[in-house]
Image 1 (tube, rainbow, N blue to C red):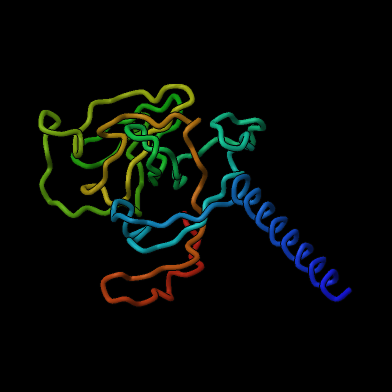
Image 2: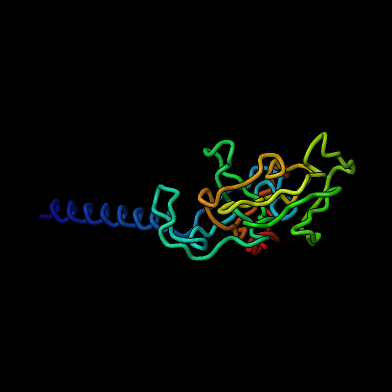
Length: 205
């Protein structure tokens, strides 16, 4: 009798673990997902070694394991920090800030971003290179006006001189969005092997 009881308890324990894993998997698939920041393209907003949570629900409920949005909720706004599939390699995830939404006209003049003819106020933007490259050499610092198409976004990294973004490969299709980054839940400095305690719990904007 004892063996049967122990066997029954083991089965119940396995069931509990399986159910917990299924619930955690569904929660991760539908609502929130953790990401690690591997590059400096978004500093100083995000640093290498920051661990963030992404709200996958905010822009709509997607059918699991697909890019189809079943229930749209809201559209990305200018200034949102987005995680999306890299257009040149969908197997990679990128994180950038939304600068232009559908219909916006984006232009860059001497590192300054203009949206619909008005200079964008960007307290988050940082620059590591004092040079200003002409449009004939690179779109990094000077880019002719382009219009953001429907269902697309123009995105840029906050670390403007060190970011691979829409200036070089144009737009992100909204179907490729994974969600909006909203909080840093852990931060590890790989250079001095220490925790950045002051960054934990920081809300992103």
